[in-house]
Image (cartoon, rainbow, N blue to C red; front, top):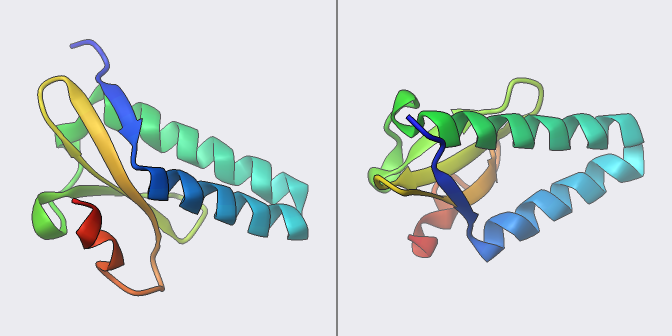
Length: 99
């Protein structure tokens, strides 16, 4: 099965940038590792989006391994839409108005 195209909601892009900046201000290595984990998660989702467990509001999520974030997404036969790069300890479901 070919990989699906992945689109990021503008707010999810902003969340990635904010988290990368936060890590960068503390440790450039951590910032680079965070971006590697985001890339890894998006690649895995693109390859097999149905593999990840159902989550809230008809979405699915993949938890990052080394960072307290989840990638929240939905998919159809051709596209994956990432709605949030959500910190796991902040405001659950805050992203639901993006759906």
